[in-house]
Structures are given as C-alpha cells and as structure tokens.
Length: 148
Image 1 (cartoon, rainbow, N blue to C red):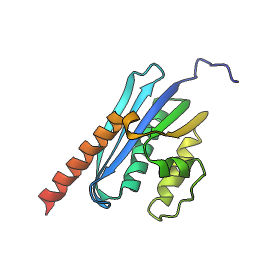
Image 2: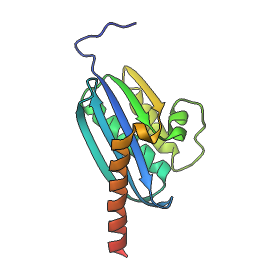
Image 3: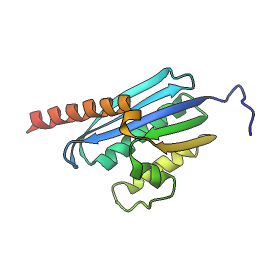
Image 4: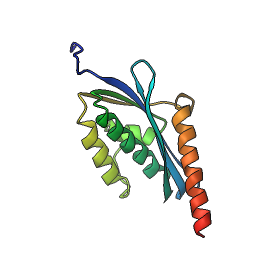
C-alpha cells in the first residue's frame, strides 16, 4: 500500500442527474467533499431538455473537472445511477449513442487520478446532490416554459 505524501489529496464526489420526462427538463449536480467531510465545492447545473442518463454523466463530468482543478489525487465517486457506475466499472456496455462520448470523456478524466473508484449507493446516501439536481431540473423547466 502506498504511503500518503504531501501531494496525496483525497476527496469524495457525490453526483446526481435529474430529468422530468426523460427526455425532459433536466439538471445535474455534484458535491465535492474533502476527506474530513467538509464541502470543497457544490454546483447545480440546468441542462435544458435531455435524458436522465445524459444528466447523470454531465454531473459526473462537472464534478471530475472540479476535483482535478482542486488537485485531488484520490477520488471516490458516489452515485445513485447504477447504470453509470456499472458502465464505468466495465460491467455494463455503453450502447446509447448520446452516452458514448460522455462515457469516453469520463474514462479519460478518471485516468488522471492516482486512485479512482466509483460506487453505487441509494438515493438516501446522495441527498444533497439529489436535491441540487432536482433544483437545476426545475430551473430548466422554468426556462423551457418561458421559452414556449
């Protein structure tokens, strides 16, 4: 096992996507915590109209970029999206054309961490990211309705 170094920076990333419809007004969100459980960053991202699968990946990508920008070296991702977790673990194949480039980008970003792990957890273990994703989807819906 590697010994922690001065550049060893661990974090946990919670991600979630939401879509009202599928496709429908969607949002993505992430919460990045340090290894003491303190919030480093969180963001809710309105996505306009898309599927929940795309929203899940958009949340992950935004969180991975934030973790890299903060020089995190060891990252654990927690998501309630079983299909996304299993795809990134190599258990499920990526068959949806809209997901394929997002998956490829997530794989490329994940390789930039010394240690990368992704875990599926129930929604109850992902409450903050879930709430932020729903808020972002609601903002997408408001924008969608005002544009009609």
